[in-house]
Image 1: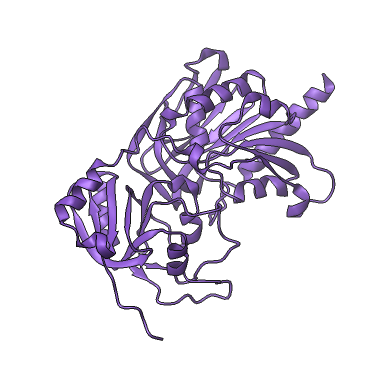
Image 2: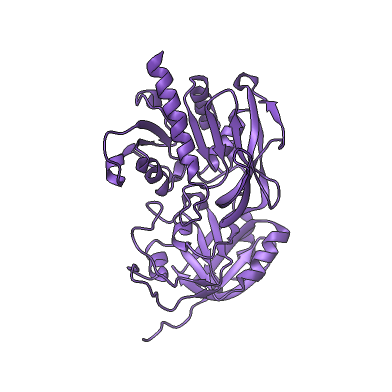
Length: 390
């Protein structure tokens, strides 16, 4: 097989650090926040996670692209990541499910990448200096003076204050039926899912448990929700700064005031925290990868979780307290990170509402936290039973 000549590329960080490699995927310029993910597998699910919008993903695992890309494993309609950084890109894919190479997929979706750089060194740098703005430059863009490239990287907006959920959300509502995912019989419940950057695995998990899933745009109103007469409301993962989600916070407060069961993940957890009156803050370099240990206070188990977040809720762990928004009663930190004690979940004790910071849909794994969907279904069953008996 004749290989295309390597095309020089540069990976430039806002502090002036430069790594030289070869172009991967589309040739051109990519600007975003440089973040690293520690997953050993699941690169396609990572790339198609909308939570990576406006971020340049650095893969710590050295060998990327070995199994190619296929249609079934995509977690959203497109790659929303700004750019992609790998060390050793596969020359050709080798897997019976592969439909095309990762290089071809990146190019087809216009994603600028770089290969042949020391991603271990980049990761160590980001761990000490923190996530920061960066750029990938290849082709004619890489021929510009380095000072110009550094200035372009520095001048782009920060992730702090970025409002991005609406840019990755579905534009139109749609329904995921239980019957399409192996459920026999009538649906047990209906749930309204607010898409803030939803991964495709999430509605599948709910549908397999007999739940009819109504997916609504990030701009959905409380009237849109009540028109569905749901047994519960779900807020998904998504990108950006939760401090910009004022409309979603106000919407969630209406949901809580109505007594509807609520489950939120990732961005949804941060929105829940702000709805209860807690603040959120930006982590130095975030948690990204399917190998993050978390303690579940409810079960006493340590679960290995899949995560992708750069912000967290500022709430005290280890005690039950009245929420800052006192009308919502008692709240506790239900999950926390065993790496750095960051809040990984919240639970109301006087209302049917809980959330987690990680991804229980676990695409591409692990599956320790999948029972959280069962917990939500049980909560909806209790709610619908009480409503029928009232």
